[in-house]
Image (cartoon, rainbow, N blue to C red; front, top):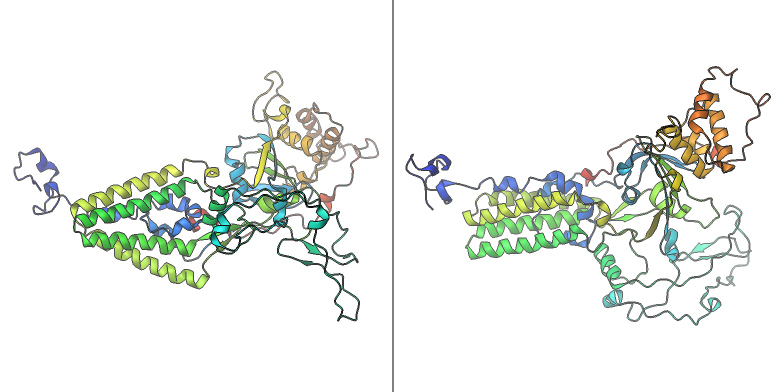
Length: 537
């Protein structure tokens, strides 16, 4: 390589003090070891998606693999802080689930905004974890049978012929048969003729529907999310989408790793081959240790329950009303989104130790590679860092398959501009405010118990009167009720003696609201707010 020996040469200003170095002008690339560990924040941000599929086992180089080296794994997914209340159930929580925040990002809601979303299961046969039994597919016991589409369902069979009857009474039992139900793997319950008192009234049996056949894309995607040779109808709840940008980047980085090894072989650089190989194996080991899949909570009984509508209040005063069933509410809101790992806790620690050792050895070897190979490795790490950083600019819905749910914006037209000034000539009802948005939420739910339980309004005689009038106006369909003006008038009543009592001015009649009777008033919240954050993966 050429070096600058004359101080009058312009290259002298940029030359190294090591004249016999391999690089031009005596340059060295020992800093390539630093490039291998830079970018921890980008990797930590995508840690859930990186380790949510079998592609995390691909041997490849990734920037900052130490971001995945954690002493423990989080049992739950990261949550977003917001006040969430069940309109009918009365459940009060301080956080919103991970997947729910992907469906409706709370940080996109403007201050004092109001929005109504309707969320339901796209396939009602799988709602709440209960599946309709399907006919066995041809070759279902083999691995190829899992990827082969199901045969066409025979629709000529009657429902009675496909129904499963309860087991007969055991002839060996002399005593009376106990009224206990037992569940099968498909969620079909066998019960006796005597109703279970604790289970409540028995709902009518739902009509059996034809299940939608899974497409080839869904089968491959499910196998990537949770590969197994067992023939089961249960699909992963919310897997990483097959064409996720992270999946594409993982495959690209694996191909890039093999290209580096091939180039190092052409340069006869055994140190580079060993360093890149160990770094790729370390990413596979760490990925195996952190490989997981999400588990959503579902109902274990089929009792009649109220609707699962929930309302979310952000710190900025925005309200988001979710109209859904109790099954959807359990999965996305009131339930816990747990992480099921493929490796046990003790094996996780062993793999973390092995991954740490491989990373340390590979970093030492990277500093002793030849000049040309170091250029290739350094350029690869810089490119991967930029690509992972670019992934953070993409919406999270591109990384997860949310086709399990169907969600639509059903916000009333008169409430869509709650975060804007609708009438400049009206300084009360035409200007955005917390009171006006609260009235929009009450007008849509036609209830006020959730307001008290969530702490959206103080429990004072003035506010109690305002809430009672707001609920009465909502049930009467009075959409033009002056909520802000009426609030200002009531707030002028300073003392309790000034607030009209039921004897002089009867309050509007209110129907029984079950949410007021639920105890405790505030649910117990987790102590560790950082539990399940993305950096903990």
